[in-house]
Length: 101
Image: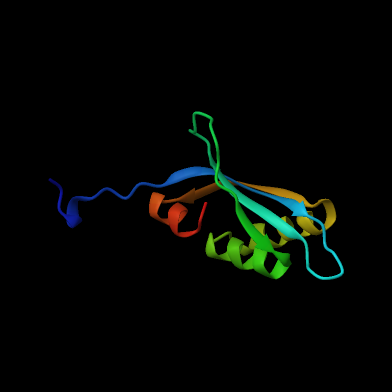
């Protein structure tokens, strides 16, 4: 059995996808879906994390550690088109679980 010092740090590379689930109403901001899709995935279902409004979406993207140079263009895409894709994101399995992705 491996002890903690021998555990290999594994990162999974994939894309973060964001799209609008629900448009803004008079009473609430738009609802966005955030998902992480590994490039090596064999298909099947993906988890979707729901975010309410751009501020909440931005906070989740920052938690994923999207670099600033990619974050602002992604948020601009969402404002303009309601969706965006951020390629080449690397997360560990524990980060994926912690972020609800």
